[in-house]
Length: 278
Image (cartoon, rainbow, N blue to C red; front, side, top):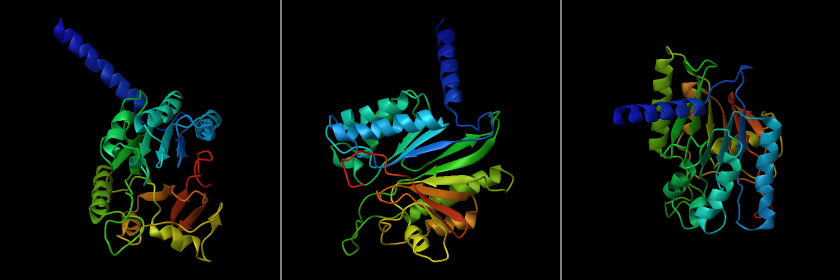
């Protein structure tokens, strides 16, 4: 009897995992809704705009996947604040993940503790790792069709003589290269089309948006607040040939996309209420 019960539970787990698997829909499309910089404050009327934004965009666009690219919470207690945002997203019944920004762990919980809260949601597909790849399957779910790289862009520089925001480590660049190579090999040597998401923009955002040769669509109302050092993540993506576009947040007054050496560099639009500058 115990064996039958165990097998039944295992079957339910497998069914739940399959239901949450990302895949192209019946129209052959895969739509992503990106929210960023919610800066949500618990019990603050101005913050309600962030949840309203989520509800309206999801109801209008019917995305297949939701991603929040950092600076989610802006008040204590961190657990209750995050749970309010998670409940709002989870209620739509769409698979989702959340990346962290430079402010999320300032409210009393670490990013690992915040991750554990996100993972409890029914439609969360949040891994425990800070850097991870999500695969998007074909319509029939039989093979990988695309990749979503989700990466931690950290907070401030830890070097005393280099001020400002942090940058992707060489280990992260190596991690990306190894993941790209692995999935390319599995696909018969052909790179799978991919997108990348993180909070703080790459240095190439500023370079591309200030070039007269670039076509910029959207609003550039402030400089790209990137890390002061460039460890070559963009160059690695260009070399590997899988990433078609990267999407960040962090700079609240930017919502543009610009093409740079064949890769789209995009900002998600500020998704919060009047709890921070926007």
